[in-house]
Length: 204
Image (cartoon, rainbow, N blue to C red):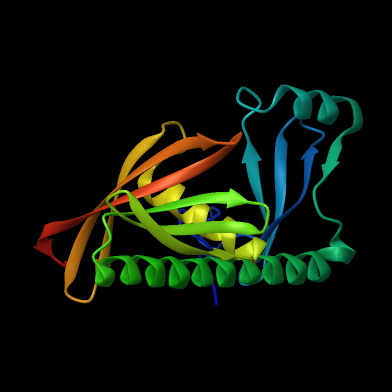
């Protein structure tokens, strides 16, 4: 695999992605030029010129005083790369698990004719309640990694990073659903309400 390793990841100038591309060090050369030494699994070692005018002030001071700033030690490249690839692989797997779990929750809610799904943290874990008017029934997820992944996915899809209400489109089979999402507080913690509304358009 040559990346990208997660959604939105931007490539290095050589066209490859972290951790295939690692910063070894920044240097100030004798002629006063600043450069960044990179190591790429595919391209090998290469240099990038750094613009002193846009360089981070703290880094610039360090380079002026010390002459270099270490990113990854050359003897540790393979270790760092392997550990980061393992971490990213684990994160990708957790995101897939969260997607499958949320898909299952929404399918069950829609098939049962629920009006909404409410999620809030309780002592045992994440309580998922299917609401039918004023009545509701549900169960508790007891997997902290999965709980965190589901909530993170909802926040990402509904764009709730800096607001408490949003909408996410969710496809199931050949049908698309428009789901209104509300974040609210319950006993001092964030809780979420997913209001189900079938989309008029089919799956793209």
